[in-house]
Image (cartoon, rainbow, N blue to C red; front, side, top):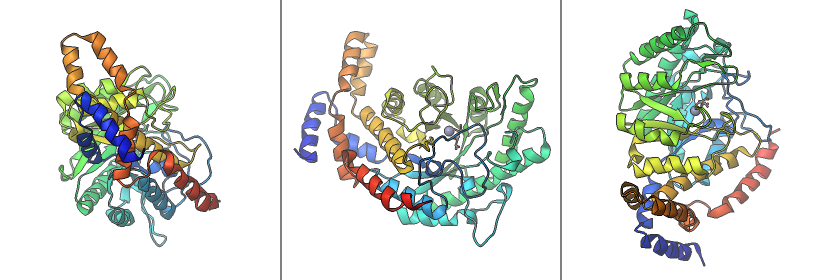
Length: 418
Ligand code: RNT
Ligand code: ZN
């Protein structure tokens, strides 16, 4: 049976439980996911040659890391060609591109340093999201940035974030659609603080100063990401969940939840509905923490599916800014992108192919036996047949066929990067 025939038979099976597969495919096609450029080069960027700091870590030494803009762009292009649908690319400030020996420190970067990216975006039909890079820099050596007690340091990072808003505005104008700009700071302490309030008050003040600069709120969607701990920041993080949620709610910006940034038995899937009740928009970094915030590649696992279900069944596809955030240096990095992006899409498709209305009715009627049975039976419905057809319709390789491209690219391109 070919892909189309299998799809037709799957379609009939889903139709029996009231699910319209054609509508699901149409909906999935319109869900952009922001693909993080930093998986391609182990979160290094082009503006420094120091180590990755800020309490985050890549492990592994798989050959073929992108070492310059040309390589990273070529790798992103390759990845996007293997992912169905239209997506965004998420940039960090450290991916600024300097020409002719010119250099600008993070507090002085300008839109022109992203002109090459804009050109790349236009050529490939992708739009960008953006992030200030408050780590991997001499001014962030003790992992204190926007909360630093040193005014020179704090001011440097305020200026950096203001520069990033300008760059985000430029990206939005060039691409003709909004640019989400996410602020995450590593600030925290390895051991028991003597003052938890002071750093948070300074972080608040810094954010106030950044947001006081006028910008177009329709074009730049400022997000604020929380975190519970980092490597070397085990006892205290300034930008905790309570801090970011309260700050965002009070100041009209968007809360960003990264599912690696909570205590291990806490799940973001359970937080989404509460956040949706009190916010017009929310933002997510989908990742996979293994025992800690390890940023493993996103799999088609329970939590990814549960996150997708919360977005879809609460009718919130247009209210959730969906981005991925992981960095695995132990495997082929392009494969890491493609695997994670396709898995996120599969999870969304799984949610779109669930008889959500019917399941809610069962819950409300207290029919928990049938509810469990139906939710479990859904797991073995022919999702794969619908997914394969989606790939075929949207010009991406079907099933594992994309991997041949990865192997070819590894042999012809990546293996030559020595
Ligand atoms: C770190 C945060 C943050 C970074 C990226 C590189 O724990 O998740 O989002 O991973 O900005
Ligand atoms: Zn994140």
